[in-house]
Image (tube, rainbow, N blue to C red; front, top):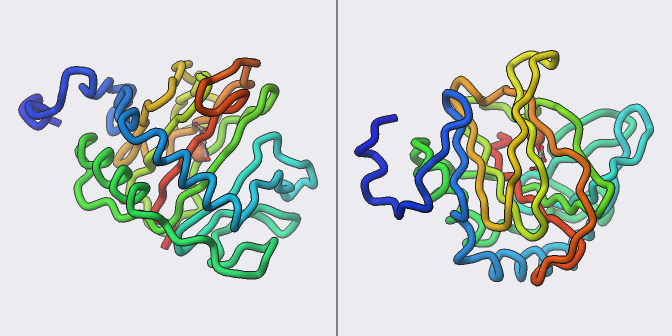
Length: 216
Ligand SMILES: O=C(O)CCC(=O)C(=O)O
Ligand SMILES: [Fe+2]
């Protein structure tokens, strides 16, 4: 990435590089946060947030839903993408333009042109919820980046290495922040620490995370 690539970005959007291929775009989604939250409300009416079970049989602490052509699911059979919501048997709600556009613009600001996600995971963390270190590796094409958006309460993101035992860096993420990782960072381990109690004017006691991927 060359500095002149970012000449047209406002200063507060200057990428913070956290590893080769991975950047934080602070407040990148702030101007459209309320619209994004409105869409989360619409999508989760159709495909309610639910705590899915891992293959080991434990309910995840984070509640999830999806939109787009593909949605990520976990159950006793394993992790996978599928085109139908297992709760309803119907296709996942479609990905709205405000979601797709944000994902494309953030990827582009991070140096990944032409990102066209077919899946968006919606994660809702309530106090006590967390996500352990993991790789996003159920997608078919690792050349496409991951774009991850924080809305509501702040939560500490952990960004590790390509091996689980590498010590992660801890990075607090705030309302409107977007993290993009791809290229040499695409398979880095990451997760979030336990959400602390709080009260956000737009989301109350929760943090929402949108994670955009190209699954197929
Ligand atoms: O909530 C986050 O910031 C991370 C979410 C995540 O890693 C995932 O959904 O795979
Ligand atoms: Fe992930």
